Amino acid sequence: MRLLRLEVSQLVRYLMVKNMKIKIKQVRSGINRPSRQKKTLEALGLKRINHIVEHDSSPQILGMISSISHLVEVQN
Image 1 (cartoon, helix red, strand yellow):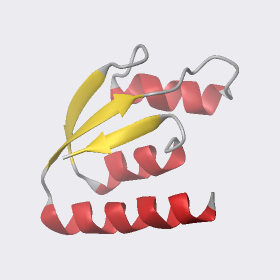
Image 2 (image 1 turned 45 degrees about the horizontal axis):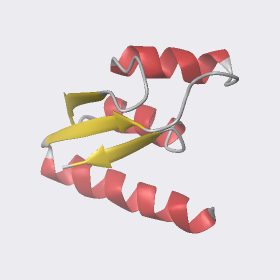
Image 3 (image 1 turned 135 degrees about the vertical axis):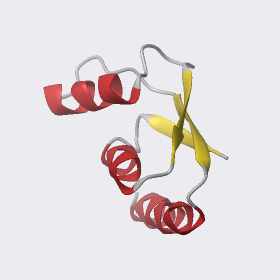
C-alpha cells in the first residue's frame, strides 16, 4: 500500500509540472465509502464504475485524485 501512495505522489508532482489534460477513470464503487469521498467523486464528475472524465491537471484536481486514489485510475 505504501508503494502505491509513493507512486501516486510522484505522478501528482509530475503532472503539476506538465500542466496537461488527464483522464480519470472510476474503477471502484463509492458505496460504503465516507460521505467526503462520495462528494469528491461527484465533484470530479464521476458517476459510475468505468466512467471516464477529463480535467486539467491543476493542484486542486490532483489533490482530489490523491484523496480517492484507491477508487480511481489516472490516464494521460
